[in-house]
Length: 450
Image (cartoon, rainbow, N blue to C red; front, side, top):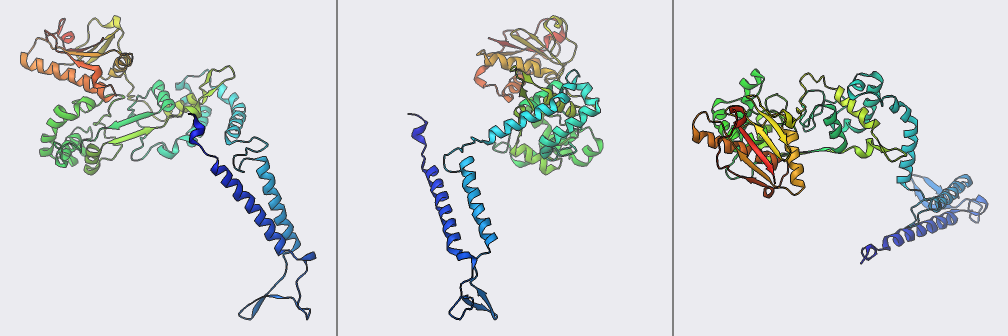
């Protein structure tokens, strides 16, 4: 069985027949309406015949087409015939010129590349940060932005509801040059899981959570005008212990590449109670398209030409002042794993990833994205992520053990939110849940790739 078993040339023949009949009809119409030598038809009395109808005392003579008009129609018919000989359109016939839209596009792109490449090469030795400050590079980047980006982000790059503002410092996927370039090149898919389908999560519960989110806002005026204290009290338990903390963290500040910061008064889908409740109940899925096919080309030697992509990256990077850039901190090197500070951090040691937690906290460190990515890469190779939680010796033993479990579950939830199959994850309670080392070293979750 091959593809010809699923195709038919019926429509090719159908279109060809329509064209042939149409041309024959046009020629017949022209000939039938043409009078000999372009003279009018006269009756026995020498009067020009009329078409036989009258309107308000006005009759229409049966005059032939003016010859110039007649020949213009003839030229049009001949042009049509010549066009379908030269170009595709007559059924499956591709035309003697072999024209295709793809070939024309490629030719135009090569011509544009030859014209603009010297300009792009001018910036090849500059870093993204340097290009972001160079007036000429910024002008070229703005032209690229106006071509590909203003449809969603607007000409001022401030976005609109559902499309992010690129001029602030709120970078969900990282605001450093490398992260921005990765976003532009390969696109991003952001998913906020809907909770409205759960029987245990009616609209009133969503409203309680929304008011707790309002209470996390760093803008005091916004917080005081939106957050109802009674609803905040009910929503806090749901947010911190049931559904939200695993992605947004217990303090609501989220994680780069995983979930947005809910405290910074930046609202992609609106800040009204209705907007936030709708987001919780229905969720959202946002697709940032990949622009690799438009901004990355091939050099003659087969290598990638990233000049346009880098200029676009520099322009977007320069839209923000990066005063508080939200780029993820790099994961600590194995050699630097001797003594973590008494705060959250993360260390990658080969097939073992260690997440350290601040006292009493179950929030993953802000720089956890690279460590999570290394775990995902290991799972993609067929390994299983075995997660174990530990606690320090201070405080109530039962509460510590529960906290160690919740920390392990937080790591598990973060991995599943990034698309890891639950079957590739195993929560394993260690025989001794009290961790070794100092208190800071003991408060950890270990993920071992086996």
